[in-house]
Length: 255
Ligand SMILES: C[S@@+](CC[C@H](N)C(=O)[O-])C[C@H]1O[C@@H](n2cnc3c(N)ncnc32)[C@H](O)[C@@H]1O
Image (cartoon, rainbow, N blue to C red; front, side, top):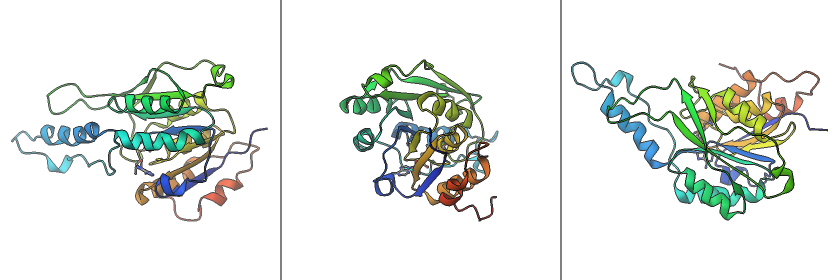
């Protein structure tokens, strides 16, 4: 029988606060490459011009409030998590780091599939006029080389999601994350997201009847996530909701 859904949200760097965790599936949307982070800023500077030619500061885009990932960060992440992940390893990333994730996972004996395109329709066009905007990122998925995972079942070759308001910069649509959780985990599995941001993966895991553990190092993002889970998760019928109430402080205001 599968265990009841519960969420364990930890504030801090994953390197410090998840050392005791092993999980069934790792689903992460870690920071992207330096190219994506710098492109975010450049797109704004060049593009947001008023008719008079001055930058429209009132509508300036916010900086991405966390550091980009490098090849070394990717390797450190996989080296730590591959031995502690019993099943699928799913990471959402950009075109620059997709090969780094694949290389690192292969070096820890995972079978790595060709990256799956993730297209978010309805995003803005690129505002600098120097080329097309990217509405896509990539999902690198890898499985253990054991029979259970070879016979896992049918999986989609791409994901399409509609751009929606994000809980934090770089957040992912909830419908997308619910689909990924359904595809790569079984009911009752423990899903881990060591860089959970607004915790869309955690909310999706709760809504799909999985257990969740994760970390977020930015206290503002952590608070957004905590309130979001307290507000957004309706316990399934006939399931004991007490573990969530114990793990999360549900007594504060939820605004
Ligand atoms: C792209 S965002 C995740 C967004 C999330 N998927 C969502 O839908 O809300 C990446 C997050 O990773 C966090 N992060 C980066 N390095 C971290 C680390 N070492 N430990 C914990 N969190 C980290 C950042 O603060 C940021 O909130």
